[in-house]
Image (cartoon, rainbow, N blue to C red; front, side, top):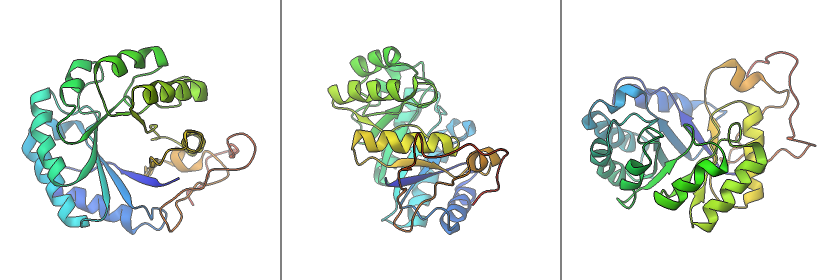
Length: 243
């Protein structure tokens, strides 16, 4: 499965964001061809900060690296989020994720059709029944169920089937441990789509040390689906050091 690395935190400025990106790209564990920038709440104070950030990042990484932006609900209104979108489109970002608080279904719908795919769900839309009105009424382009709170494999596959019936994309949320990563790789394989799988670059020990088997990105920017029984990973007796 193709991998994209989530970069967080970005810091307070475009300069600090570029340093965070450089640290990820220089790490041999992350030979990815796609990055998702994940914002802190303070990035939503005004559109100028994000506009400057996305333009600077695109210049910094060049034209070939695939980029996405996770606003992490930082924009306080549809109006502020809408001011950001032209900068994201100009910089060639592939999607805008969680632009508004997760209970603002109408606001998410108002951002659809402005030149960039709108993604939602990773910050708290849970079971299939909760997804139904989002699919019926918002027009969001990408659904992002988290296997840890969407009802496991059964819930995620039902949500993906609902999304497909509405001609929407499914890109599971995967910011968590290797356990979640293994589960998500199986979901991606079962869906048979070409969507990239999220690869957390968190430095927290729990991210890397919960299983005996690491899941790494190969030099081609992809991750192998574990092929042992079950999830394909086994729990460690204690947290292991990162690979």
